[in-house]
Length: 485
Figure 1 (spheres, helix red, strand yellow):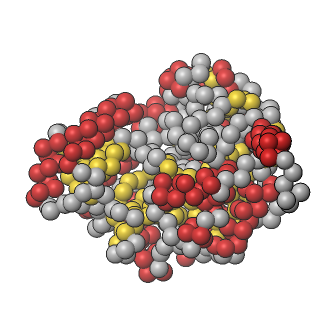
Figure 2: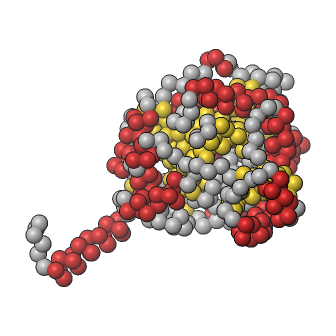
Figure 3: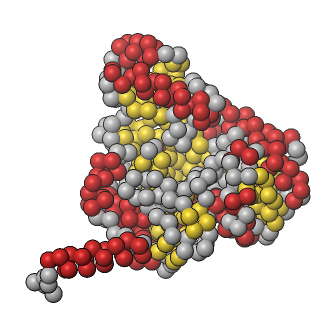
C-alpha cells in the first residue's frame, strides 16, 4: 500500500541529519530536527523546518532516548522517521517502536535489522546463500574454545576476536600470539558488553593485507533487489574508515561482478528492503573475498556511490518507505566516474585525540568536481559528547587520478578550519603518498606509514603558522643571518 510522507523527523544530528534534509527539501518534504541542549544552535537545527529539544548532552538522555524521539515525532506531527547513520539507525527495537506508534519507518524491517545485526546469524545466512565466509568459530564461551578451533582447523595467528552483536569497529581485537589470547578475549568481551549490552564474541582468521570492499544494495517491498556497485573502504584507523572511493581500484571486472552478485544474493535471501550495505574482506594476494557483515542503514560513504551513478540513495529510501517500486533496473545503472571521499573529523591528526571548541574560521572547498556534506558552520561549537565527524569532502573525476587531483585541491588549497584541529593534514598526506597513488592499500596503511605521513603534514591552523614564524625568528636571532637571506 502506498503512503505519502509530508514531514520527516530525522533522529540524528550533524552531517547525517543535514544530508537527509537536503533531499527532503528537493522533494518538498518538511523536516523536524531533534537536538540536545549543547546542540541548540547546531547546523541541523537551523536547516530543519521545525526542531524539538529532546534532552541533555549525554546520548542516552537525548539521541539514544527512544521515548523522547517518538514523543518529538508526535509533537511535530511528522509522518515518518529517518534514523540517518549511527545512534539508533541499526536498533531493531527503535524501528519497531516507530512502526507501533503509527509512523513510517525509513529503513529495513525491524526483524531484518535484528537478524543481520547479529554477526553469528548473518554469517549463517551468508553461508546458506553461497557467499564465502572467513574461517572462524561463532560460539565462543572461553579461550579454550578458540585454542581448540585453531588446533583442529590448523589456523595460525593472527586471528581477530569480534563482538557478535556489534559493528563499527567496536569490540574487535587482533591477536598475534598465544600470550595475547587471554587479554584479547577479555578485552573483546568487555568492549562488547559495554557497547552493545551483549558479551558474546566470535573469532575468525585475520586476513593479512586484507582490503575492505562493500557493495551498496537497495531493495523495495515488491522483491526487487539491486546493487549500485562497490566501494573501497580499506583505509582505516582504529577500525574506523577514513577514506573511501568508488569504484574499488583493487577489483578486476570479473571479481567486481562476482562480489556484487554475491551481495544481491544474500540480501534477496532475507527479503531486504530499503538501502543497506554488504561488507566483504578482500584477500588481494589470492583474489578471494569473504563476507564480513551487513550494515542495515544508510552508510556515511553513500555519497561517492551517488556521484558515480547519478542516483539519490536517500530519495530512493523515501520512495521505498512510501511503497513505491524501484524506479531503476540493474541494467540501468552504469557508473561513469570515479569518486573519492575523506572524513574530516575534529581530531588531532598526530594521535587522533578529539579536538573540541568553537570553529572560529571556516572556508569550505568549492569548484568543479567537489561535493561537501557539512554538519557545521563558522562560529559553531563542536561539543565533546558525540562523534567527531564535522564534514565529508567528496570529489569526482573521469578516473582515479582526476578524483585525487581534485581532492588535493580541496584539501590543500580550498579548505580552512580554525579553532579546532582536524584530520586535514593527515588526509592530504595520505592522498599524496606514492603508495596511495599506486592503489597499494591495506587496513594497516596508516599505522605502517604514520611516521612518513606526519613528516609530510601541512598545517593550516593560524596558531601553528604563528609558531613557525616564532621558531624562524628565534633561529635567526640565535644563529645570525643565514646564507640564503
